[in-house]
Length: 507
Image (tube, rainbow, N blue to C red; front, side, top):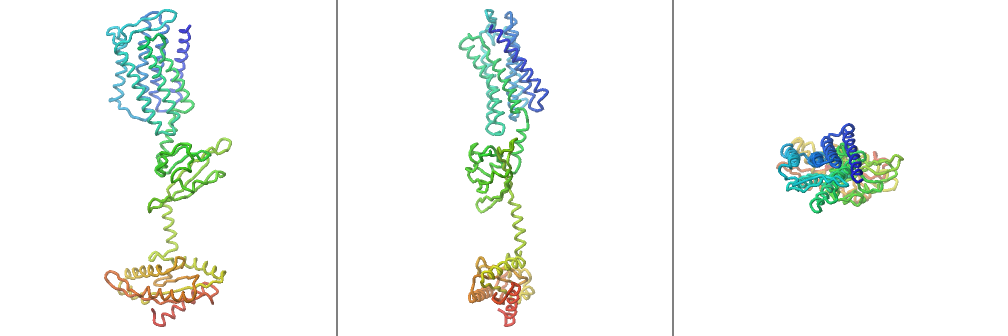
């Protein structure tokens, strides 16, 4: 009765294995299927051999069945290792590794087929013909070698898969499934070996064939459920690791799920960050990314990271992952380095409101700021002042010393004046060698004192350029807003005062 049950199970397993092989051959488009097909064919031969063994009528038939079985045993281990390496993208040398392994498998088959001559595989064997038929034997000295080779192949395969489990985060389910598929036959083989060596196989049960059948069931489930042979997940993983943008995946509760290598570079602690931990607990996670609204599906948030004296700027595109019913199941965060763009924009903005030679505000931007300050002072009934100053005989400096010397003088004088002022005073290069200053929150006496201080700062020490000493003085005109209704009127009054200073002898 037990033989009939075993034969039925093995027959169904053989049919299922052949169906799996045909399914993979015609339905799977993966380039990874060649060694898997060879593994399934070898498994089919193994199961067929054991099925024929159970149906044998004499010792000769049983030994023939075992010879068929061992064709499957020898090659299923070999091709399993080849498939595992192919799946894990570990290249095995065709002549240094693959060819010797195929030769070893052929030698195992040859030594077992010829064991009647040398008795190295089986010292003796016979068919038990009681209530159950099964092949019995006394193992020879080479029998443990066969088992050792099979287990080495399986362990190496498992080692490659475990190594990839640690690094291929997005394929962990497929890899764990593949690890189970590889280990089941080894466990069955180990149990059978223990029964043969320690208990003389008194249970008369060949576990390998059934473990192989169970592996095939898991394999088919893995292909259908987890797309084990589909290159899309692996391709997506490689694509994400190859892009410059940092990619981070979190669930709807803001718990960390996945990331790419660029994200690990941006946030060094991410490679040690445990899955399903709150992403906000990540060291150096920007404050700007901690509180985005879950009500909105898309966000674009900019933030900066300071490292030493350098500041880098980033833009994070945050997009919701929607379920078929419209609920949010998670978020993808794609972070782009925009430091170059920000730098260019700042340069353009600076060029729009600063004088390129002196670094002071230019005339246009000064007018924008002064209008606002003037109107504010009028509303608050406050005094404000405009100071215009012009470098005396500046044309003579250009004519006698050259324009580079003139530019140096303008830069030097600008720096001296700027160091004299308060942070909120508005200083600009008004044109040529003429400067303008807008003052608030100051009384007339202090404004006059400041003008005198600026005059002395400009003229107290000459400028030295390429070994030449260049004396510089300035004439200054100061006007108060008391009698001016508009900024234009205030500027006109300051201009008149400047001309008066020049007319009275300059400096």
